[in-house]
Length: 149
View 1 (cartoon, rainbow, N blue to C red):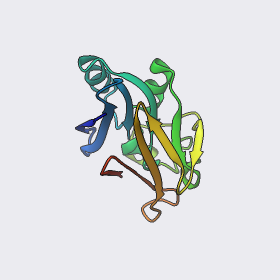
View 2 (cartoon, one colour; view 1 turned 120 degrees about the horizontal axis):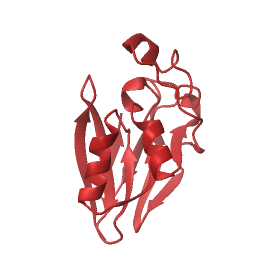
View 3 (tube, helix red, strand yellow; view 1 turned 90 degrees about the vertical axis):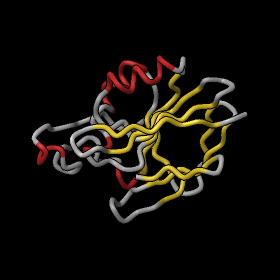
View 4 (cartoon, rainbow, N blue to C red; view 1 turned 30 degrees about the horizontal axis):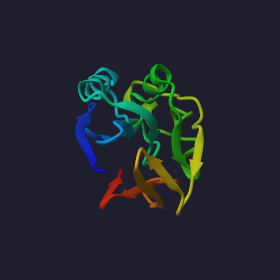
């Protein structure tokens, strides 16, 4: 079993977005789908990956620009920290209204907290609460790597 990830800098402020996948099962997650749905989709397709879920490190606009389109087109659940649940659905709270392109997404499917476990194919991850930048800020640790926003 082996984890790989593809890092992309997307959107007007070059936000990090990661496509993380199990090389054996081809199961994938997207961490922080920042803008540019077509590029994320091309990346998944070019590696023959099956998107299983989306993980948000936090709910600011630059981390959720492609969230709604990605989740609707791929029909996958979204994980976010409880403290940021209201950010993704409110353009004032997620600051997108101030960036000139209001973003309002439907509520996350799963609210996660410190110590929660997520599985992707044969890979195992642990949710770490890392508040500060936002009240519900998260990092995701697994396979020797930490994904943070």
